[in-house]
Image 1: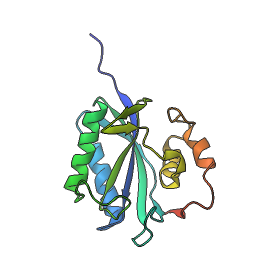
Image 2: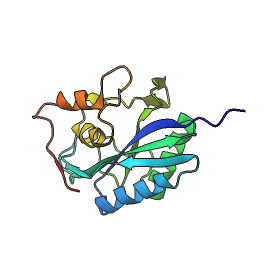
Image 3: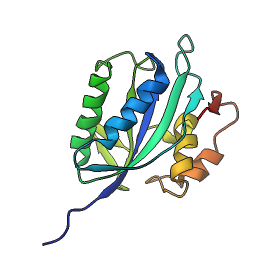
Image 4: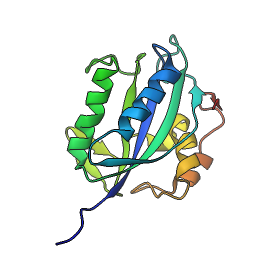
Length: 167
């Protein structure tokens, strides 16, 4: 009998409401407690300008790396459960303010393109608030169908929304 398989996954974390740094810390703690998963590493925190709507507070962003035995759809459900527990209703305004946002950035090097789950997360190559924290913990991770995280991060234009590492 073979040992259970552990898959590497990366989770994008963001918040701009209700003490955002604490929300991100709480989400990381919840990720560490997920059944069938192990938190491997986490990036520092970054403050970034909002995308889509500028009339809202800045976001605090981070990326976490996990090893998981949980299938992709089940893991996505676990992430949505964490969001709900931290005060994010489903179906909220796109690009609007939120207490917490957890995105499944990458799952086991797979490309998943289904109605309810798209991985790698769409738009990764254009999001400095994802790429900069991600390259801290996995610069050589190859985003399926794209390039290494560090290569993608190096291509981000300086005209992209401002971002700074805060911790």
